[in-house]
Image (cartoon, rainbow, N blue to C red; front, side, top):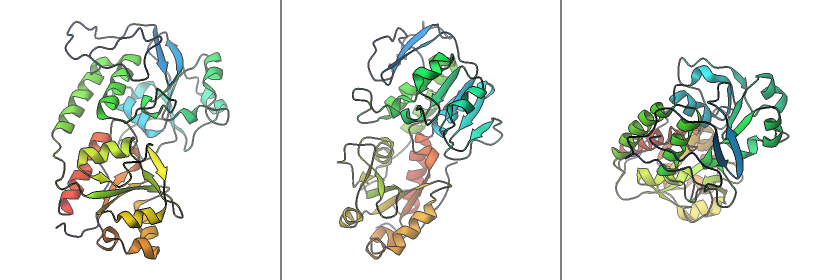
Length: 328
């Protein structure tokens, strides 16, 4: 039987891509690691179907704005810090010694984006591109700014990953390597990521788990086809809401109580900390009686590591380490 312990710790191949992507499928184009004849640099122009919007990239973007941590962290991992003219809407701190201009704590407006004179905006969510947000994609293109949404965030039918898998995440990294002419860096990153994932040994007995993202009166939880499910699967957890066909979903506390999960995964952010979620669970008499709450069986993951991106393998590793300390 697992012992009780409350843990709150932070987480510390683009080999070949088919680049005639006009009319391509919804998925990032899969890499072919067996073709040693692939050029080390990208060939432009590139035409890509991104979430149903066709974009043409005439050359490697040089002045890039990112929105959301997942996009900024990917470009930093590819060694492209010098090309970042601004980052916005971060979900957590960037790696130490990163020197980039944080232009806004939230999604910047179009005027603020254009003031940075970017040639490319890389967004973590489709909703970042709107008249109320960074600007509509068509409008930004009129100003000579190309736009790109992280493929895992596509919501349109035929484009939304169902389910999200690590192969999809890895293919997205490979595609970014091609877009930004950083194919060798993407190859190295993917080699590291695949090796780290392969080294993970999921916990035994598949403990049932609630992925608690946010919400007080109504909990917002990890559902069955997005990054929460992908991370829980890799760690060996049995998601109590795996049957919901969405990435995240609102549920009722009654359903949580009825499921009585053995473990609760808490997503930690500055604006919605793991400690605040624990307080919610302990203040509600019904959830306070859950075994996981009474015994402090929590796994804490940083928000920025839980959206599809370069930190998902790290999230799996941390989850497994915390589960081991809880006795699994």
